[in-house]
Amino acid sequence: DAGITQSPRHKVTETGTPVTLRCHQTENHRYMYWYRQDPGHGLRLIHYSYGVKDTDKGEVSDGYSVSRSKTEDFLLTLESATSSQTSVYFCAISTGGSYGYTFGSGTRLTVV
Amino acid sequence: GENVEQHPSTLSVQEGDSAVIKCTYSDSASNYFPWYKQELGKGPQLIIDIRSNVGEKKDQRIAVTLNKTAKHFSLHITETQPEDSAVYFCAATSDTGRRALTFGSGTRLQVQP
Image (cartoon, one colour):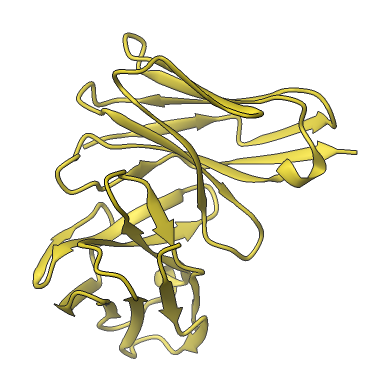
């Protein structure tokens, strides 16, 4: 299985503070994604990357930015966290010839 | 962009019965349809997928069917077991160059022993 780890696993932060979530893969997969999961909404795409320094916005990108300076790391930043960004965040990679994703274990973020 | 609707939101069945979850999609260019299973506290895991050039695919107790004309696809689980209890998500993509999936809202399946 593709190695994909997210850090931190849990975080509580205050409104207005910056937060960065990290997604790390141990294999050389090109495509990486950030989703948020909220009750009743399933998984919604925030940003994705198709290579180093190549990123694009998803359907819920407002308030988020991403960076990918190395193939193995995809960072998601909340510049100024708001309570509406309380969610579970999942990173995913698209592996091999299939378009199927492998997901990380998620980061539970609470903004108070 | 793509829009995926999933029904039902919750489903309760008796052990041994079959379960069916249905999804519809909006973009006729979509050509890849995976299904994911998510257990409590974990990330979703791919369980089966189908491409638009195939009408049905089976893997042991699970199967997926696709109706391109009607733009809907379904997950079928036969002989359900308690360990099938989880949240299931369908997804679709027309953005095959960048593989960005659009997910349904999920179905919580409860298999009663």
